[in-house]
Image (cartoon, rainbow over all chains, first blue to last red; front, top):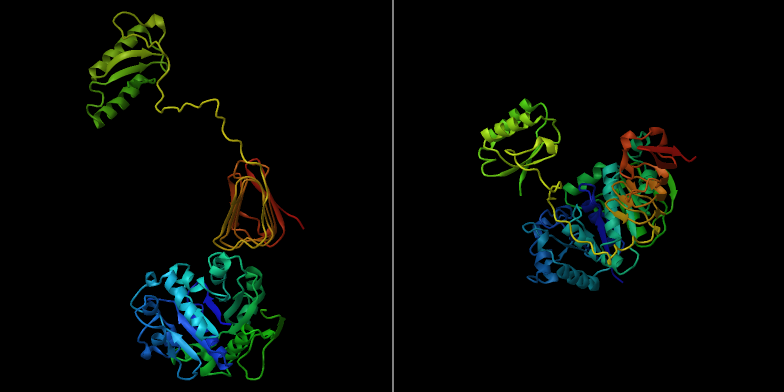
Amino acid sequence: MAKVLVVTSGKGGVGKTTSTAALGAALAQNGSNVVVIDFDVGLRNLDLVMGAERRVVYDLINVVQGDAKLAQALIRDKRLENLSLLPASQTRDKDALTEDGVARVIEELREKFDWIICDSPAGIERGATLAMRHADMAVVVTNPEVSSVRDSDRIIGLLDSKTARAESGERMPKHLLLTRYDQGRAERGEMLKVDDVLEILSIPLLGIIPESEEVLRASNVGSPVTINSPTSAPARAYAEAARRLAGEDIAVTVPSEKKGFFGKLFGRRAAA
Amino acid sequence: MALVLAPEAPLEDWFTDLDVLAERSPGFFAGRPVILDVAAVTLEKAELTKLIADLSERNVRVMAIEGAEPQMLGLGLPPPLTSNRPDSEVEVPDLSPDEPPPPPPKPSTLFVETTVRSGQTVMHSHGDVTVLGAIGSGAEVISGGSIYTFGALRGRAIAGTTGDIDARIVCRKLEAELVSIDGFYKTADDMDSALRGRPVQIWLEGDAIKMAALD
């Protein structure tokens, strides 16, 4: 049974694309068939983060508009054969996405893959609403600062009202992925603490990704951090988050940079 | 339609103002029938005659006089207006008595079982609003009556919009951006910082929003 997952946030620059790539790669490393879709038409990035920018021929818009077959547009990852990318168009804009076209593409992908991960653009406009439209579950990426938290709150409201699932009266499972977290700075009061964010957003916690230069390094070499440096703290946090997404029950920790030491145990239950 | 001129004492100043107006819009009075309303000034008959002469010098033709004592008027002066009512400028629609306005809906309580998220608006004009969750930053709850929230109030709570001065706002944790009752409001900056984060009730006393902790 395929699952459609939207990675969204409202605010830009909080790590949606990085998280999409890292979670997609981690799920694929565990043996699932995964496709990641870039919905950021006009400002595509996922191809770069996945290191596939030199192999893009057709894109999501071509498939939505019927100019190309899905199989022609999908790019298989060179490192993991069960990981694919459906890139966005850089020359078009979000108006080129049609609701019917997106629905058709998602239906077709459901037959081929276990996980369909939609990388939402920032904002609450057409691109973002279409990315979440057909999702079965959502990962809300949030930084520990007030503007990001409020934008996430806004997105949660939209997930509960504008998705196909919500409109048919079903529950829309939402998970919080807290990125760029720095425990030291949170304790000094320079950023929000995990508990503050959880209290405001009141959705289950999927994982805490520590602030790390490994993430930027991985992006720049075009490789998801979970592939590029699997033993780094952020990679381990993403790998655990991916296992929780797949249904495993693991307590949420903040993995630290020191190898073998798993940081402070929060004793928090993971997302069900 | 006639223009009404109402001179005010002192007349010299009033004429100066009139001249400024006439200079700005030349021909404003040309050919217009003018009613002179002298209710605001006390004049002898001779003064009234002079006033009308001064006006005709300025090309203002007085067709009738209003607000003057009968003994002041006579031959050689414009006649008084028989009806003392100025014509209203808008047509008042005829309200037929056999169609009474619909009665206002009965007040009821709106129950919100979830959290009101940022960007969402809950509006309920007739009655109270009870929110079981929180009201997020950037969210808005508008109620004709009172607003009760069992979670944190981080957004805006606007109560008593239909003029209910007895409306209250009660929350479990005050972190509001704005609270308002019957049009009177307080922003976060104006709230006592000692109340922040505490359970608080908010009510109206005269023109002042009052707040007190419940713990």
